[in-house]
Length: 176
Ligand code: SF4
Image 1: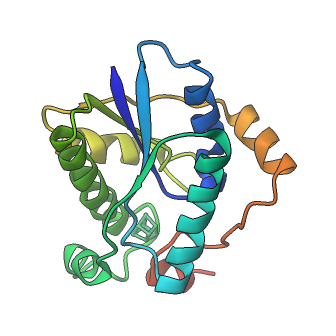
Image 2 (image 1 turned 60 degrees about the vertical axis):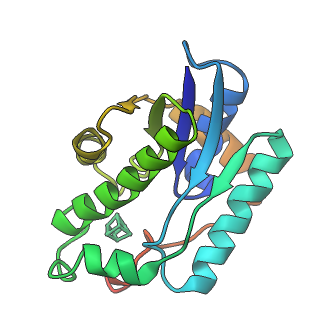
């Protein structure tokens, strides 16, 4: 199976990428890391997270792709939900927006399935992430893989990753 791993940043994805690169996930023959995060604001922050993601993939020799940064389109997608709390309806819409684009990319590029690390942070609700993916991925299979949290933390401790202190959008900055 050819898998697209939807990633938000290097610290969240480090363990998952290592597991996939090591062939530790059954049935996955090939994979690519997809970075589609138009939710991130401001753009300078987006560039930092993307650069760190690329740096980690390059270190491991892992394929990666970065899609468009259209924050205006993302704002349109969450319009009316700006004041919702984190883990609320704005986040569901945000996840759906990103998974829909990822599934479209997977379908157009010959990949069979999508998985993600969007739920690995302790601030996230994995069930909410899984529900959003299942809602929009259509004929592209969604794999709700439970990643090795210990490995992720181990790699994080040994690395000098750039680490953000908010989820990504401008509305999550206000929550600090
Ligand atoms: S808090 Fe995070 S998941 Fe929620 S809408 Fe903002 S960027 Fe998306």
